[in-house]
Amino acid sequence: MTEEINPQPTESSEPSNDSNENKPPWKPSLVLNIVRRVLIQSGHALREFFSHGAGATAIADVRDAFGHIAHYPHLGKVAGGLIVALYFLSGVYIVNPGEEAVVRRFGQVTERRVGEGIHYRLPFPIERVDLVNVSQVRREGIGLRPPEHEVALHPAEETQVLTGDENIVSIKIIVQYKIKDPADYLLRVDSDANPLIRSAVKSALISLGGRATVDDLLTTGRPDLQRVMLANAQKILDGYSSGLQLISINLQEVVPPTQVADAFRNVSSAREEKQATINDAQGYANSVIPKARGEAERLTREAQGYGSQVTSRAQGDAQRFKDVFKEYRQSTANGATDVTRYRYYVETMEQVLAKVKKYIVDPREQNIRIVQ
Image (cartoon, rainbow, N blue to C red; front, side, top):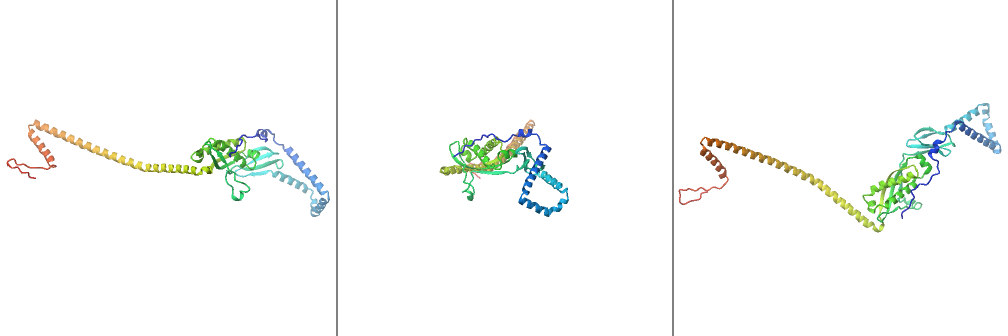
């Protein structure tokens, strides 16, 4: 069954950042007055303790052991000053690389983001510092089966979605996130952000899964769904001012219902075979087409060479005929027409008769014999 999660944030009772910025800074005199009153109250409590039996005995023991110190009248002032100095030095704190600090004064945020380095704040109980690792990438699994030794204490949380084409699928999701605003994280989320992450991602999944088909979840539409889910879940977290930043949402496993699992597997296998066939055809085309193009280029160049050769030969024959015709006209003009004509006749007959079978006939004989 799907879960309905209200993505609308509720109003927070935490003070706003604007009110923090409008607060006047603490005066040193007021701080010293608070410290003095704390020391006075501590002194009264110690006197009441040592005024009774156990306290008196303890005082006597201390006097016996350290009575010689009384000869140093300024030692008490030095010790008191040292205690006060140590108290104020306790306000020094270090922010490591990859961390940010949030400073709160009596619970109210005064500094939202303090970077790495050595810093100072007023000692406890006036101010407190919380260090938050903002560079660590955290991971949360939704719908994953816990280890066997944890099954009894933490049963598997199955995430089922009703798709737009009225199919039910079980989904396992891996979410990666980190803290982007440490102040919002401390005030509104505190230490365990996983329940809020799960609620936001499930809400985005249910809303989007109702518009998607089961094929979108099982096949090629999954990357687009993951991208839209990431944006929608981030909007929900920003609406709560959670201070969390989603990095990635991965639909690790999408399982169809058991009753139709075989049919889904057959469809998936058919798609894989189809894609394999397409890949084989593309590979064959990639190997054949270049060869065909090379063969076509070779034939084209051979035809061009043959055409150039035939054209050159025809041009040579035409030029030779022109030269012969010119010579024939000159011989005709000189009265040697029969000689020139006979010479060309003989040359032509030599070329023709050299390629045919010949029969010689003697006209003087009445009986004709064919002599080969």
